[in-house]
Amino acid sequence: MQPGYPSQQPQHVDNNMTMSIVSIFLFWPLAIPAIINASKVNPLLQQGDYAGAQAAAAESKKWSKWAIIVGVAWLAIVLVCCLGGGLLGALSGSSASTSGY
Image (cartoon, rainbow, N blue to C red; front, side):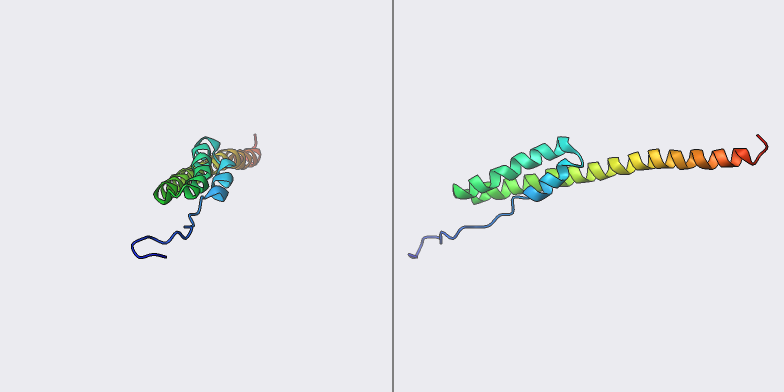
């Protein structure tokens, strides 16, 4: 290494591809930009664009988190509506049968 020149050691940036793929099962509309940005990280690193790779990784992580949050919230709402409604219907049906219906 010569003085004044930065070392050319390859930098590692996590592309968040695993989280992006997991998020596609929860809420795919937001997971698509996550996967697109995750796929940009490694080529940017190979080109030497460390800042661009970090930015793409951050975008991928942001979109993945939003997809997971929205997907889990949607899943919770569906479960509460389906199971909650079924449970309330079962409870109201059993109480109606004991009231001399």
